[in-house]
Length: 504
Image 1 (cartoon, one colour):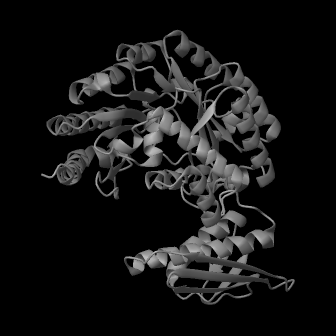
Image 2 (tube, helix red, strand yellow):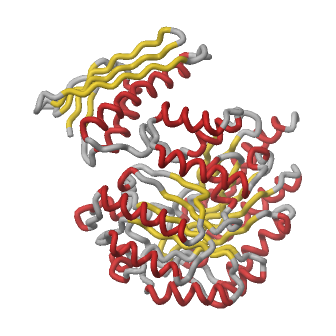
Image 3 (tube, helix red, strand yellow):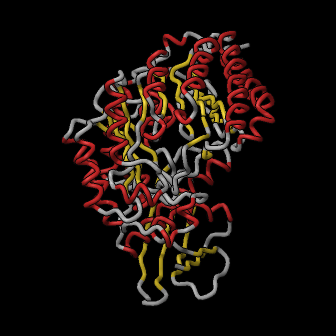
């Protein structure tokens, strides 16, 4: 679809309009200047006349001659600067663009004009500002064109988060820790995480673990010296259980020696997502260090699907390792399922749900497949045939119904670019078994320090809430060569953030 926009001269409009266009069309070309043989012409008008911002869009289908019109008007308090004003003007233009595109395509976008990752942050912000739930829901619907169904999902999730973590808004002076282990048995076709096939890489593994231990010691020392508590610790990757039981044992010993007050950390999670990495020895190590929250991720219970996406384990192995973990004391097991994997439709996904019912993990994360830019699946889209929008939506609805019928409640969600059906990923759990780390990473209420290869840190200013991002290098060699430098940089940022917060 080729779309020419009129009435917009500022190039800052291009990105939000492209993201919205992507919600409606898989392939598109847009321009605010000129475009050869466009299919659609969208003429915009906008104005700020204090206190009102008004916007109007007229979409003309150049093939049929049909046109569609959208209007928006909202009053605002005075703006502090031009940047804030332009941000609201962009929202007003995006608002009317979604209106006319929905009319033209006859497709209702359940998340309206939202293209960001964390929609529930909007509701949290309103609650923190003292807006009543009823007014907040009404404002979100009017401002962003979110459907009632998604507003209700946001409400359930925010309510559940505040039940599980009542002091969620007071944790800004604590931190959580993410520890990335960048190795897996094999690389999945949809994956863009820093993950390297572990076979033949023992030298890299040894060097990497040396750097990781250094990060844990140095930042752990800083946390102790500054009396900063840790809320949660999450071992992700890759697959953290790809390393040996002995290496895991030394890693958790380092955690207990280096981190402050480990006994009172609210939650420690280890992803054991690939069933082919789980052994009795590794489960013994987890038990030794009082870790009982893990992930075992089937993704699908269709063997042909697992083969197609590069997961070299069997369905039977997933079930076997789940029972092994349960029998060895793992009391909080999460499982991931993916909607829209190649070759799967409603029938296959319903079968996966029925197999999940036989295990009943404490929590279940339902992902909607996203064509991530750097993945094998995106590079070879023709090879991986996936379901259409309507079928994807039906699968998500079936997941929602199934979880409700089996006593699970939604407790976090996030969205991604190029996600099938413009839907979302939702974490469900049995009440009281929610992952606190997942809540913290999604709602960005506190600093999360990333250790290890490819680990991203998000430093949240305890006073202003401003977020500063910092990432370790993704490949093991670069990490191994520079881990001391990256550790020192993170300590510098921590000094700036928490020194100011304490009035130092």
